[in-house]
Image (tube, rainbow, N blue to C red; front, side, top):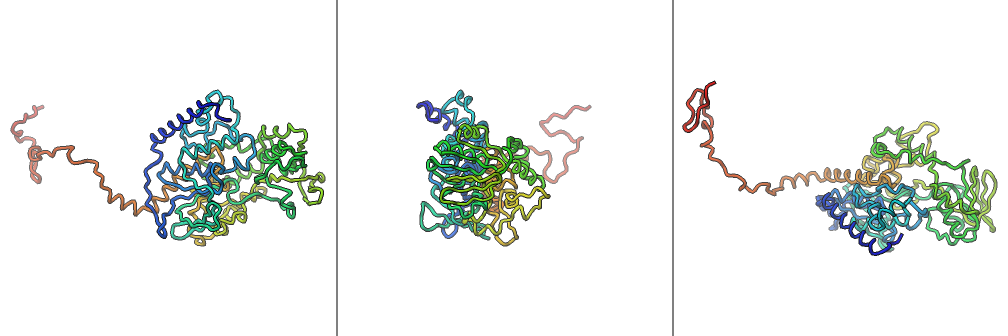
Length: 511
């Protein structure tokens, strides 16, 4: 939705003034209090956040409230952080428009305030779901008004925790041939849905030429699919988005192939969205953490109503159920996809098969991957609840920190905090999804503030001892002539009650 007139720009300017006043009255950007660390003559970054999407921005803003400055690194060019303007293909967000997302409890920082300032209350009432690209515009505005320190075009190529309280981070900036090593006290991974891995590619794709297929998360010009027979493996949200985009770009046909016998219809994760779970998931016994996450995953989240209609309105879209894929083989004429119900022929295949925790897809984590403790080490589920994604999930500490598989093998590993989707089993969905991202960011920021104080307690105690700002100047009172006020000198017995009253006083009447 474009700005209708200069009135929209004026409304946004007024909102920004209100926001700055709100932040002022909340004392949001607290006074910095951490001592500056140096290493090799260079300043050490207190918190280095990898990823400047909505999770990274929320974490940065929450840290600012604690008086802690963060630097955010993102490999994407400015204004293209996260998936919204690149690989996401839904028309609208799936979250209800009323959710406050990364606003951290500040009304003037919400999407609704941003929207109404430009288009008014009536337009808000008429809005059904938030358009995807409009959400990206909001995040661009959020970055600007929160003054987030984002360094675009900065790709992290290696992480190496150290035993001396620092983490080495190799960063290649703006496509440089060599990397520069940064030093940070804490590193936060705000790397999204595939934060510790990447696309999940089924074994049946082995040997299929990469030119004939793509994962739904790949950057792909869907105009190249015009006139082609396209197969989509999967029937979830990303499958619908990919299928609709292919159809809208002129695909000759799109066949969606699902292993399930029927489409799931109930979004079980929506039924779990209560404050008690947001704040209490990390407190649950292991058996309940696992049971909840496994149940939601096993039930599968259905694609949104509107996304499904976006596909089914095309007469050349076909939904196939009970078609477990057995083999895909390449022929000069087509890709032949053997399924439980027969063989399909496609010119191009799109895999909507989700993501996996797969450290091999993240070479920048090579130094830490072998040492991260996982839930597969921590917990053995009962028969019937086995789950590869949960098994491979990192077993995180209370502040999203990685823990060592073997204590002492990777000193400093706990200085890296996993504030992305794979934290869900340990902490619930508070580190990536819109509904509770502010809760996760506040938990992380407050916890880091406490850790920093504990690490620097000697410095802070010395500062306390050296603190000498007078509360009183000494001229707020006049010392009394004590001798005129006491009834007996120090050390002398006080006069008895029968002694005459001092001269000038009036004896109390007898009762």
